[in-house]
Length: 136
Image 1: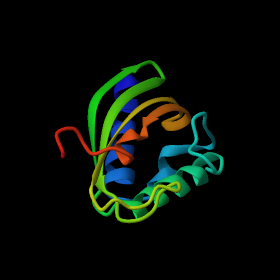
Image 2: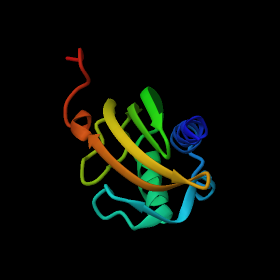
Image 3: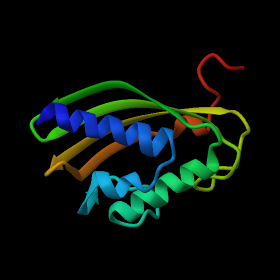
Image 4: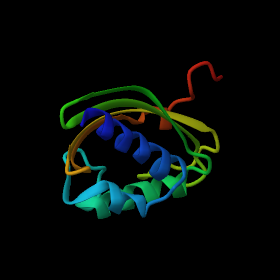
């Protein structure tokens, strides 16, 4: 089951985040999905995820997500990803910078019946406020 869950998690990053396919959220998340780490003001469940990723897609014109590490055991997958994108619109009150932002995210997702049922995450949003490493 672990490998199937890894594939679902990777599909989420590729289809939803890199391709902007918000409809895939309905395929990947179970009814009653719980995000234990929502963004400020995010609605609950899959609709909240759609809302959050729509806001990200609107604020960044060229989103690229890479999976740095992924570990799966039983019904749970943990991943550490790097998010890159040029911020061209406001996001959560942060004005557009016009430069590339680099954000790091760690997710833990529990799956049941081939769908995500719970998520815990930590987002390092400091990349929105400071230049990327090496930039000056």
